[in-house]
Length: 139
Image (tube, rainbow, N blue to C red):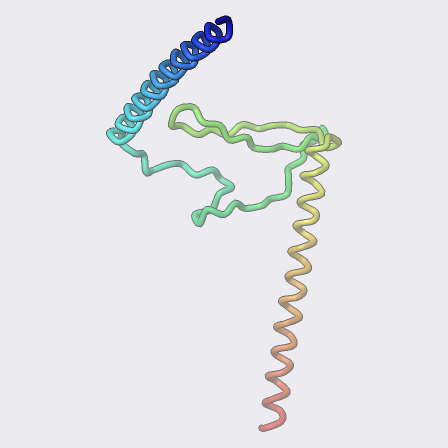
């Protein structure tokens, strides 16, 4: 008899919990629909200001980090208040992990760009030599 009482209590608790879950799901669905409807009626602002480091094509321009006179690296932190976008200067010590990573990342990027430039210029030079040799052979 003790087991049946516990079983009935567990079933009642499960039923009560499922009712609460259903009520929660209904309220959540109602809130989501209201939010969706509100966003549909909101005018969209198509003239959004782009940050200075983002080009028109959506690619970010990688610049070397700026270092101030005190040995800090200056990062730009983009924030948004409502629909207005703001940028703030964030000073990070150059000897911190983030500062060291930023400096090594930019030096690695510069090295990679130089390597690519060397490969492309070498390819163009070889192509010009091949075309020049072709003309000398036949003309």
